[in-house]
Image: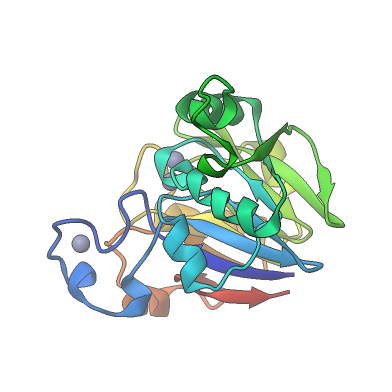
Length: 255
Ligand SMILES: [Zn+2]
Ligand SMILES: [Zn+2]
Ligand SMILES: [Zn+2]
């Protein structure tokens, strides 16, 4: 399995529009963060987690030639607003793309992008909208021989899902992990976890909270994502415990 970080940034992205802070102005490529998403390559298939606002730039930057399935964590704008870019992959692959998510997430996506799912508009022929097959998931399933387990987590008061892929987990947009989900995250080789900023936030883990969760889970390696402009990559990364690090756009892990 190969994991590529297509984006490691929070909802506003880094640099943030109009911001003149040291991180936004640093020019360091590791301080340039598109919206959070990963691509998992397994058995020659590409599984995309979330279709961010930046999806077009992300697939161009990482030379992604096909997308065989999409997993959704939740329906906030930064995780879904690139959905229309899937059209290009329908065109290249000449097939529909299966998408997976909780019932709540899928219902919201259907409402927000009704043009994709409605047959009412006759001018909206095939090439003008993504051709997607929607799947509602609530329990473990297998895609391309990879076992995928949805993990129930909380993003403020909203229940959303993270995913476990064998011994790797991707938990973004999270402020609380219930006990049963902590159990389901035992024995990980790699935990990719939300760590928004230094200060506490109502709907995301702070860096200290994320470090604490990684310690509690005794995960071998923790990688923090969904990062704001408060983190200068080099400074913050250096101070983290040995088995923990910040994600950056384009980071690749081979497992
Ligand atoms: Zn987000
Ligand atoms: Zn800034
Ligand atoms: Zn969110």
